[in-house]
Amino acid sequence: MTAPSSPADLVILGGGSGGYAAALRAAELGLSVVLVEKDKLGGTCLHRGCIPTKALLHSGEIADAAREGEQFGVKTTLAGIDMDGVNAYKDGVVSRLYKGLQGLIKSRGITYVEGEGRLVSPTAVAVGDQTYEGRHVLLATGSYARTLPGVEIDGTKVITSDHALRLDRVPASAIVLGGGVIGCEFASAWTSFGVDVTIVEALPHLVPLEDEASSKLLERAFRRRKVGFELGAKVTKVQTTDDGVRVELENGKALEAELLLVAVGRGPVSEGLGYEEAGVTTERGFVLVDEYCRTTVPTISAVGDLIPTLQLAHVGFAEGILVAERLAGLEVRPIDYAGVPRITYSDPEVASVGLTEAQAREKHGEVTTLTYDLAGNGRSQILKTAGAVKLVQAPDGPVVGVHIVGSRVGELIAEAQLIYNWEALPDEVATLIHPHPTQSEAVGEAHLALASKPLHAHS
Ligand SMILES: Cc1cc2nc3c(=O)[nH]c(=O)nc-3n(C[C@H](O)[C@H](O)[C@H](O)COP(=O)(O)OP(=O)(O)OC[C@H]3O[C@@H](n4cnc5c(N)ncnc54)[C@H](O)[C@@H]3O)c2cc1C
Image (tube, rainbow, N blue to C red; front, side, top):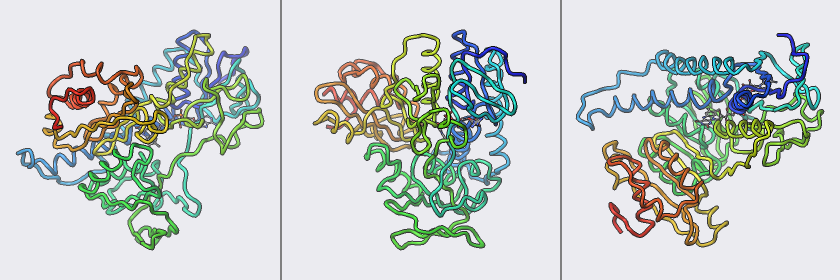
C-alpha cells in the first residue's frame, strides 16, 4: 500500500479491541484514519481471548449437560470430547466475527495497513519502508502472556493461553499456574472436558481481585466439581519430565501433570517499538497516560492492555472511543474504572461491578452489606446452580458494589452496572419489577431486602 501524501487525522498502531474501536468511532466522526495491524484485525480478544475461550466454555457446558442429563430426567451419557469438533465450532465463531469486523472497517473508509509498525516520531508510524504521518498517533499494541522467572514456555508441555486454545487433544491432567480470570476459565472448561485440573495460586484466594465472598463461593463450587487448587502456594521449581511436567511448591508439595498452563498475567507489548525514543513515558513497559488516555507526548495517546488500566476488551473499546471523540472535539468524561463490569466465565460465573466490601469500607467507612442466596431464586433452582448476590451499600447511600456468583450470572451484571453507575439507592431499585422466573429476580430481591422489604428471603 502507498502511504497517503497528506497526514491522516489519526494513525493507529494495533488493531485489537482498543485500536479498532478508536478507528471505527473516529471514522464515524469524519476523521481520516490509518489502522496498522501486524497480525489479525480483532487482536487478542477475537482470536486468542474472549471469544474462543467462551466457545470452549460453552462446549464444556454441553459436555456437563450430557453427563448430568439424568438429574433432569433425561437419559444422556457423554460419549466423549472430539477436540477437532470443538475447535471447528470455536474457529467458526471466530471467523464469522472476523469477517464481520473486516467488513465494518472497510465500510467506514479506514485505511487498513497490514504489517509490523514502529513509532518513528511523535506523529509517524513506519511499516517497512512506508511512513504514515498523522496529526495524532494512537498506541494500541496490547499485551502478551507473561511467565515467571525460571518457568520457560515451550509451547507443548509448558504453555500459555495462546497454545491452550490450539490444543488438538484433551490432556489427562493439567496444572494451571494462576487462579485469576484466565486460569479459572481454563480450569473450568478443562474440568468439563474430563481433565484432572489443579490450580496453583500464590494469593490466599481464587479470583483474588474479587470480593472475598465471591472467591469463597467459587472455591466451594470448584471443590464440588473436583477442580483441585492450592492457595497461598508459591512455585519453587518447574521441570518438564518424559510424561509432562513436575511443579514443586514452597509448601513442600509436588504436583505432576501432562501439561502446565501458565496464566500469571499479561505484560504490555511496547519493547522495541520506538515509544520511549519518541518521548513517551513508560513504567514496567506500560505506557503511562492521564484520565483522557493522553501520554506524555501531546500528539500521542494510548489505550487498552498497553496502559495500566483493567485488561478487558470492553475497557479497550471505551478507551478507544474516548480518544476518538476527544480528537474529534467532542466533550468527553474520564472513565470510572470501578464502574466497569467484570466477569469470570467459569462454571459458576463470577460477576461484579463497583467496589468490593473491603474497598468500600476503606472509601466509605461503615458500609452495609446484604447477601441474597440463589437458593431462593426459582430459575437458579431450575438450573441447579448455587451462588448468591451480594450488595454493598454506602452509609445511607447508594449501592456501591454488586457481586454475583452462579451459572449464567454474567448476564445479570449489565443491570448491576446501571445500578452502580447511576448511584441508585436500594429503595429505587426495589420499585423495579423483575420478570418471573428469571435469575434477574435475585438482583431485585436483594435490593428489596436491602430496602427492608424482603419478599422471598428468610430474615
Ligand atoms: C485467554 C484470554 C481470555 C480473555 N477473555 C476476556 C473476556 O472474556 N472479556 C474481556 O473483556 N477481556 C478478555 N480478555 C482480555 C482482552 O482480550 C484484552 O483486554 C483485549 O484484547 C485488549 O485489547 P487491546 O486492543 O489493548 O490489545 P490486543 O487485543 O492485544 O490488540 C493489540 C493488537 O496490536 C497488534 N500489534 C502489536 N504490535 C504491533 C506492531 N508493532 N505493529 C502492528 N500491530 C501490532 C497485535 O497484533 C494485536 O492485534 C481475555 C484475554 C485472554 C488472553
